[in-house]
Amino acid sequence: MSEQIKCVDAVLGYEDGVVCENINFNVSEGDYLCILGENGAGKSTLMKALLGLNPPLKGSIEFCGDTTRREIGYLPQQTPVQRDFPASVREIVQSGCLNRCGLRPFYNKEEKRLADEVMERLGIKDLAKKCYRELSGGQQQRVLLARALCATGKLLLLDEPVTGLDPKATAEMYELIDKLNKKEKVTVIMISHDVTAAVKYADHVLQLGKTQLFFGSTEDYIESDIGKTFIAESGWSGNV
Image (cartoon, rainbow, N blue to C red; front, side, top):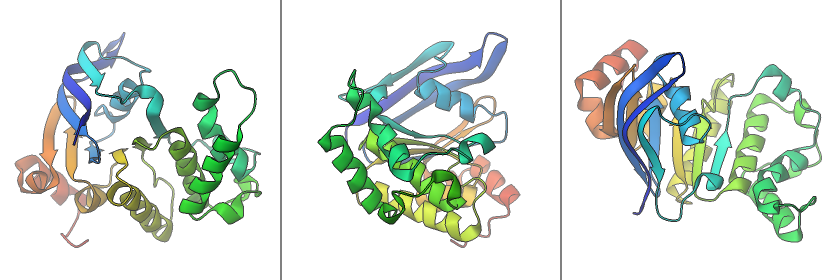
């Protein structure tokens, strides 16, 4: 598989100091990378760097081949205000096509068709005319995932995609993301506190903690000292 992202000796932070350093990892087409770490470990700072919002202080994060930042589908954490957004499901999903529109102030037939197709794939076509703020948390996350897929068919960046969801909606969301990765070959990079989901679904793990603590396959992570420690602290029994 072709390499899509290469991070070399990255130091992440802001004007007032370093958040995380010595970061080295790569992502190839079809990978499923889970980024783990405690609060303040640098996960969100790395996500901002991947999006181009906060470039590394040192080192580099490069997009390879024909993959560019414009082709990232991003699913951010929601605020209470965003959950109450008064727009229809169709309007929100179609907004993922904005980068395709250029200077056009409207969506063309192809972009409307894409939005319909993605809603169908994610099982929310029947919600198209519903107001977003009237949906359940799980339905809202599917809508945001559909919007991200309208922006790209290549690479999804997911920031804690199951936060606030009940166990049933959480399981459904993880299964949906896994299907997009395994069956549709969409590359997934997911920030999470959920080590259980990481070892069940991801094929690679990156763990941060002021510095890079681990990067490698999920199998190697489970056998590593840092992996064993983090898994034990999470209370995971080994059952998935």
